[in-house]
Image (tube, rainbow, N blue to C red; front, side, top):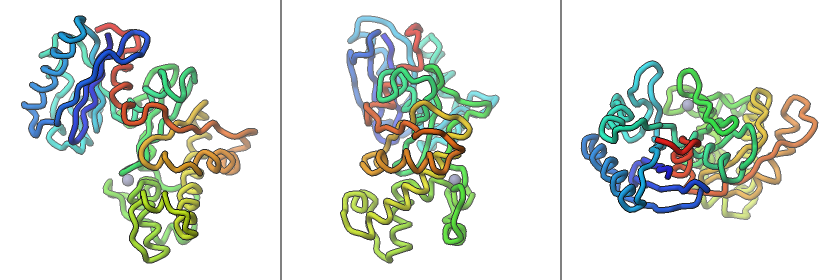
Length: 298
Ligand SMILES: [Zn+2]
């Protein structure tokens, strides 16, 4: 049995996957409000799941952050009490086995590469575009975390080939830099762009759902920006499949319009890249966490 845990800001979920990838069990709890309660809850979740499944298993976990380079401490987590805590070591001590952690975007990419929309592909880039823009790289079934644990974090590259208007209007990102892909291509980025051009305030979901000319023009600008960023990515990594996730991935035009645009902006690709919607949706984090142990042992 492989157990995956998705540690979210409000909900924490455990899933048990059988050897063939089918779901044996899943449980969900509210994410505790402090670190000690969280540790206890995670240990209880694993023990409870093992009792229910009747077997011990490997434990992988998707976290909204990453482990700091050279230390075992969590950084960049928006569940802020995790930052600076040795979560993996504490869990390993309590569960008496090795535990693997990965960023939730990496788990998304791993889930889709293992048995989702990119199953069988060698190099997969997973994009999560919703409240932010994240990404993860999986090569031959393994997450490419990188030397500093930020492999795939393309949300904080500057928007490539900006127009004069995009340079002057570039919003400041929470990371402190200006004009990150995230401030253009996230849901809030789409809404801010729409408001800048039209003077109207609309949530991203309503812009995406509308057939209005101004709304569709904003979607067109979003797609063009994504295409420039993806062309840069393709020139470096040339993934076999790019899988889209997050709320923005529900925009149908992405899958029609991105491939030819990425080919146009890329370096003589000689064909369109394969860009697909995710298969597992909200379950990708918890499934990918389980797949952090492809060998299925603990
Ligand atoms: Zn940024």
